[in-house]
Image (cartoon, rainbow, N blue to C red; front, top):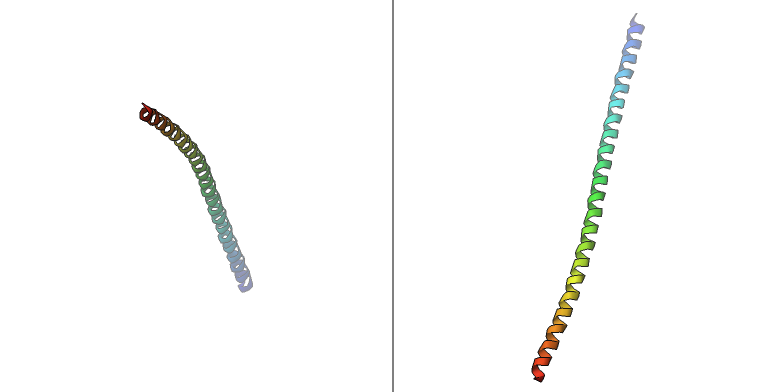
Length: 84
């Protein structure tokens, strides 16, 4: 009877440990899945930031070109006014 109680206690301990390991494994999987979602979200935000930066650069280049053209036109007008 004493051996049976020890065997039962040992089996119960193994079951409890297995449940604990399984729940730890699920927690680890959940943590990993959450980390993956966070990384994917960060990647999407980074892609959006890159696209926004490219659009801003294009707008800045266009504005710089327009400013150069306006400056050249103003210079031509000024030069013509000096010749009069």
